[in-house]
Every structure is written in structure tokens, then in C-alpha cells.
Length: 324
Image (cartoon, rainbow, N blue to C red):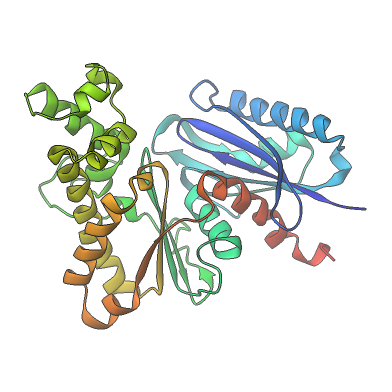
């Protein structure tokens, strides 16, 4: 009998739920608003959506090997205990594994969302064939995962990889995590847009305002990308600044860890070469010679599906001996 996997990706704004086969193919997926569902309500919403998808595929609980879930916060992946979500303050010390297993009746495995994304990319995406990989997501926050010699590196308290909270300025802006001058405080989506909107209110001339129909509050990174591709000098400079900030932060990571590959995903990465070109140039200029020559920076291949694919992979990793 064929077996199936459930993959869940909890984002700061959207939670995605998917059913996959054992080869990582998504058979059906859907999503709901994370912000509308806190704690037990989110768990209920995951279970309800999984039930709905299962009915559409005519699957029963016995057809599933288990459920994997990636969450944007610090956690103990062994116990499935979420300490807190940096961008979802209501979540603190949530025994997510236990609650989901009780609700769904499925063996459940929990990990940080970027570590989950990294598993998806290394298994099926841009990281296939590489053993030393850094993964970074650029979205509401900036998350990271570190794979060295083919193994996910966790650290003493199992929370290593928070590249978004590496400081690049000792007197910089305060970050959501409580730190000062973190890279996230420069390139995280909300911080980035806050600066853009502030500049425009101060009178900076840019086509971004016209693209937003003069609604400053509605400006998005996609609008800034559109303006930049149209030659707007302000938009081009903002993306260049972001790429340079990322290049500075990743210079330290590259010098320290000597990765073969840096995979960057998330919504902000949709700006493409507007960000990647200055990032690569900064890294090449600032990194130590050997490490800088080795490290290659690429865009994530699996796109928005990396989270659910990697989450499903958690089930296989943890139940490997039970899979023929």
C-alpha cells in the first residue's frame, strides 16, 4: 500500500499545508492566515485543512506515515517544544509536537522553518550534491540554517543558525529579537519597507509612489522591484544597499564556516539580481581569499514549496527504518 506524508510550513503571515508522496512530490496543498490563528486555534486549523485535503484525495489517517512541520522560531526539535516565535509574540513554550499528535493522531516532527527549507533544498533543490551549505530566508524575518559535512548543526541549545541576528553595526537599530544592529534590522521585510516609506514621506523622488497609486502604506518589495527594473535610481540604490548589507553579514559566515554553497530563498529574494549582484560583489571583495573563492551564492530552487517539502522530509528522516 502506498504511504503519504503531511508537510506544514508555518510562516509569519501564511501557514501552508500539503500532502506529498515519498518522493517529495506535492499532491495537493492549501493555506490559511497564520495571524488569524494563535496557539490551539492554529493547531485546529492545521488539522482541519489536512482533513479537507485528505478527503479530496480520498485518503485516511492510516495512509499517512506522519506529519512534519516547520515553524519560524527557536525550539527544541527533539521534544517538539517551541520556545517562542520572534514574529508571533503570542507563542511561548508551546509543546507543538504533543498537541499536534493528539489532534491529528499522526506521528509528528517539528523543526525550525529554515532548517526545514534547507532539508528540502539539499534533498530536492539547489543544494543537491553539496555537503557544506548555508541556507538563508529573506522575508518578514531573516532565518538561517547551517549544514556542515552533510549534517545539520544545532549548537549546545539546539538553536544554532540564527544568521539574521548576527550584528553588523554595534550602534545600529534595535531588532525584534532585542539585539542591536542585527542584519534582520536592515533587510527584514518590515524594516526595509519602513525605511522606504520614511524616505518617500520625506520627499524622495521615486516612481515607487506612482506604482502604489500614491498610497505609501501599500508599498511592497514587489513594487520596489518593478521600479528598479524600470530604471528608478532610488529603487536601484535600495536594493543595492540590501545586497551589500547581506554581503557584509555573509562575509563573516563564509570566513568562519567555509561553505561550498549559500542558498537564499524567501519573498525578498524575488528581487533577483538586484540583490544578488551586489551581494556577490561584496562577498568577493570582503571575504578571505580561499573561503571567498569557494562559496557560491544561489537562489533557492523550490520556491514557496521548500517549507512543506522539507517538513515532509522530517518524517522520512525520523522514521527511515520504517520505510522500505
